Image (cartoon, rainbow, N blue to C red; front, side):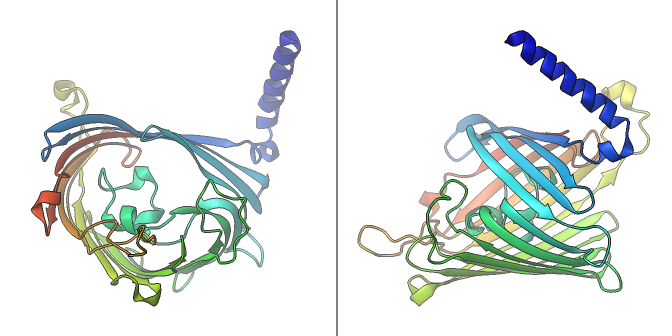
Length: 348
């Protein structure tokens, strides 16, 4: 039995090797990529330490019909110690013909809401996400259908519309009487400047919540400046509207001359000092307590984050992030979150 399996595997490898010699066959060869984020945190509020593997992701992309139908499967083997299936979808996205620019994606995928939410971890500017990216972006992944159109000529823009179960990744058997909806419009007045508007309508329990998002960023002279705002409204006014805001700036210092490599071992190709301010008012996740009252799931807070990112390889493909986060609560006794973070990121 083992011999038969071994022979079968060898035949498949041989076939794959021969197939890869053909340009047509190469179009069907899956592409494997991965990401590892490992971090150390020191909480200055409670004088505590911890190490984490924040992500250990592996993804598989490929073509069912080159230039038209594609697929992706991605799993995280350690999302803070838990195994999670992330993406599992099939997409019709022709790159030629009259339907070029249009796409339809069905399966488990990211919801098209918020610029920060749509960034992959290797694209993060900071070690930890903002309040918008973490506490405000409900069900960042869900199972459903997304239709999108992208135009890249005179006035580039893209439009995405999605409908989803609303039960997240692991409860897909329930029949839904109400769905979640998302929409996102992105346009570029000129190349370094992007503006986006997003809507996410979710109903995790008895009430529906509508989230409205606007984001803008610009890249110029090695600066990246970005701001985002989210307004969250609760059905029947069971909870006062939640506001969340962020603004941050990053400056890239590139090093083309590596004459110091012998002295220092390896000279970074980029160093990026950065600073962020974000806040969030009282936020409820859509669930009432035992008495039927809607209370803050996340109390109002502000945060100042300062950091520096070292990129010893290609930027965003291998980064070392050093951040310090200082929290400000209306009730200072709630603050147990001030921390120093050292994170190493590798993408392959």
